[in-house]
Image 1 (cartoon, one colour):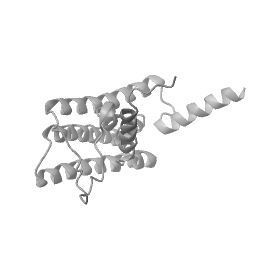
Image 2 (image 1 turned 120 degrees about the horizontal axis):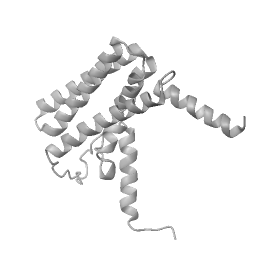
Image 3 (image 1 turned 180 degrees about the vertical axis):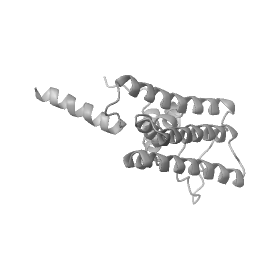
Length: 186
């Protein structure tokens, strides 16, 4: 084998490990990715189309703290929350786990979390109490899913924790693209 063949084998093995797909057919893995990403995207699209967002203007007043986290903006605003959600990536790993009751429980919790999050996105709670309820139900379902996923595979459970880093990076890229305007390389 050549170095190129070895590299391809290493990439395939790494992808199989990441997706928990060892012993699974490529069709099963593709169906799992399509089902989890598709469900997450569908829930996000339905929620965002139900109620139009109010324009959010960041505070320009000196001394006022800016939000700790950022909402996705621009072209990535619909795709990032669903596709790059750690729970969605973890759900792909759960999908590829051997068929057991624990896998079914974890997938039901994941689908329930996606549906509840879509409801909260659509409702856009304004009162403090409703925002706390939204945060608690989202966090509780994510924790329950992570617990069930950890029963199947410890790495899958660890992956099921939310992160805002990807959103910050995507927003930074979006801002830079807007600042660049119509600049070309030639």
